[in-house]
Image (tube, rainbow over the protein chains, first blue to last red):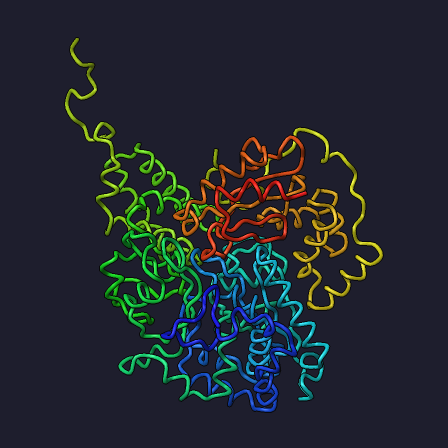
Length: 442
Length: 182
């Protein structure tokens, strides 16, 4: 179907097939569409085998980092310890709203994926951590979990398998940083959402100190399809010459674009055709000026760079950016890049957990400078200071929020420097000019 | 007009001049609410993990999270009030002061900003009679704040009114939307 518009013929709707179909939201509706059949089979399958299939499929984490899912699962061994699965539904990366639609339209697809993954990593308990603002997704997923318990699909003897699978929904309370996996675990434990130093990695000591796997909503929703159809089936989606990026990906498209919304395409799709044929380009005769293709934390592309990019992990890296979360933000030729980059840095300054000095001070300092340049009060030296702060706050902190703030500044300065320079008032230059401070002769 | 960047999280709403902070806290976790909290506690291996859910229950019952409320939550979960306050102040959604009957959050982060979200904010302040962001209208009906990315970027501009999400709000649609709220 597609949402909020019908699927384009060039989409590959696997996860999004029932978006917009209200009947798919109920347990009965989901079962009528084949739901929970694969979970029943999977619960009777050895976890090692499930891990192997996902490993063979080449599925990579869809939350942003792109870590191979099967490899992440393979860290979880049958060691007799208590294990946990966390589903990261704290979708907060500006430009990204794919998990929201999965949860709103196909909550049982997520519950099924979570239950399956819990079994595959030898966990009896899974938590779905949903950001606090997502009230409707929270209600839909909570309802789906209740239905699944009532049907005996979850609980002490899930689907008659003799295995215990408990799934609990946990609501966040407003903090972008809780999408960082270790911050999410702290938040779930009832703490401030500060990221933890790694190691230890979650697979060793995660939630409540136990071995834990954290996967994104889209990743977990993909898994049942792979188990059902096999790794080879999944690998057919992608560029023949790039086996490292396979499968389909949800892209959420927003900003100055004719048809914003959700699109699911096979990885390796040409970005130019995606932007113009599927999304309709910039609205009302405007031209695209810039595109952020993977959520606000990845480098900005100029229109020319975007038009030449290929939509997969390696394709976007080749274009100088990243696939990230698949949140595509389009800027048309009316947009003032200084103003918009300043707004992004304000986002990061607001969301910094304030734990690391480089991030706490850097995000706020960069924002002050960006806003003063925006207001025409910047100096030529400010541009160098921006680069210096950005470099000093990258790769030096516990998590990558700090780097994420520096990214749009550095890529913006590189690609739209003329817009920055045009905002620097000549009279504001602090370059010493002999006699410049003397009052003009009467 | 806008609050500057703060790296501390927490309250975006201004403290009221007088009143609500002096009212004694009426316990929330009694009867059915107590049973509900016990049910939530059974999901976790520690009591502390029920802190965010317990704070949500408190806020749903009282409209905000008072010092007395935090002390009650601390008591229920075997924590100190100072610890609970430390957690409350980290998150933006717990109101540390009373807010208007309709708590309006307008997303102005970049994807919505390029679609005109700041004009929605201005229209919202005007329609609700709120003197500024974070302040409550004189009739007590509205508090308006700017919020960071609501995760509904394709439906710019999304706003939240209490727990309800309203998508594709424009400066033109604000007046009718506000008029229809009780």
